[in-house]
Image 1 (cartoon, rainbow, N blue to C red):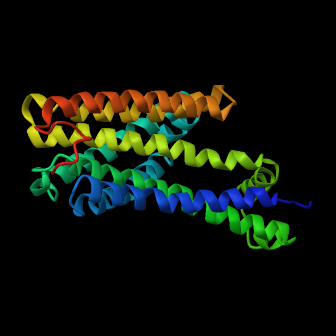
Image 2 (cartoon, rainbow, N blue to C red):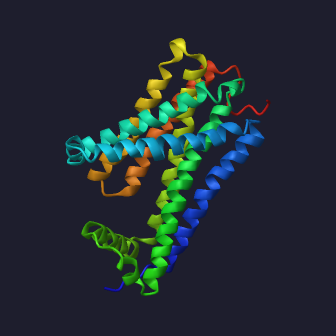
Image 3 (cartoon, rainbow, N blue to C red):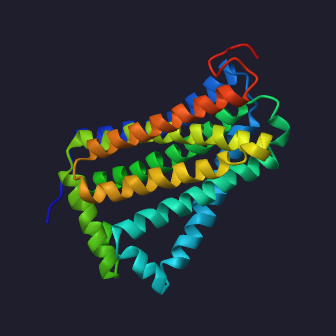
Length: 275
């Protein structure tokens, strides 16, 4: 069977990949120049995402999915969504809290460093998701248009993997071009969420005591948003509705973070430019 990916689709994939690079770069530049933050929180945020999300979280999920409990979890979108949300929230928020209590403890004199951390954590996630996925799609699309589909499947012997590749070929060929831009729209909401959660955990780690509840609150919000997105995708075929729902939830988290900031930060506000 011949597959053909529209040129406009490939163009949009390139735009998405470039945006995945631009998001962390722009956030880094804005927070460094406008808010006079330290550089370290950004790179610590990147490192925490890699260690806690890409390595530890993924290792645990892979292990659990090989067990009987894992089979039960995967049998229901509700179990799968709630489990995935809880694991993501637990690992990433714990990673944030650990970083703020250890390597970033000396940066707590400037609360805006919480924003820089969130830029690193959420920015690297955007880079990882948008750039790597689009590079893979671009390479595959170019090969499909060159009539080289056979080369993509020549070394694949596992039937499940083969079917996955065929499904990808069909998706790349049949997906409306503008749908590839959804990744950018979704990541903007995700980055806003990460920055908001970073603010909550920052004050939980910095102040402690009666403010420690902000850490489990961040864990709950992170888990809830992730679970909601996964479960909703099962029942709502329109991705724009799903993304709009995520924006609403992210906006709620931003609102909570702003209220927490106003309560606990000695500064006038996030928008105050004086250091």
